[in-house]
Image (cartoon, rainbow, N blue to C red; front, side):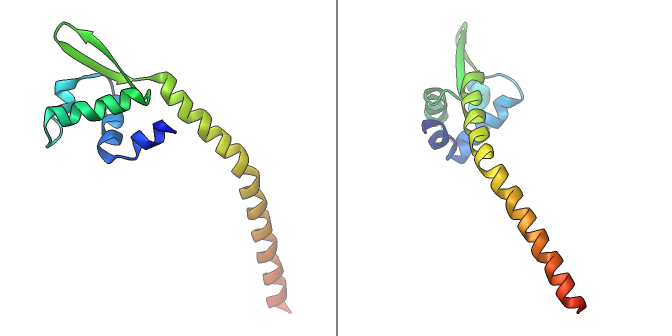
Length: 109
């Protein structure tokens, strides 16, 4: 999934976290990193391609914000994972509690 490949990079994760607080101009994003503006621009391009951020033009500035559709895709993927693992983890918890109870009973004998 292209989304998770984009999020594999710590700089891109940091950009997404920044944008979660509100939209920012490309220059404002770049000023928060110790790398060239073109390097930050490449990160933004990757995030845009992964549909994690979107951009709008405001005069000479490019304003970036979170792309809700891309984030919803991540949430849907996570929901599928939770549906799979939730019951399995509940069953494991029950089995561990039962084993602990048996151990407690055996220790008392």
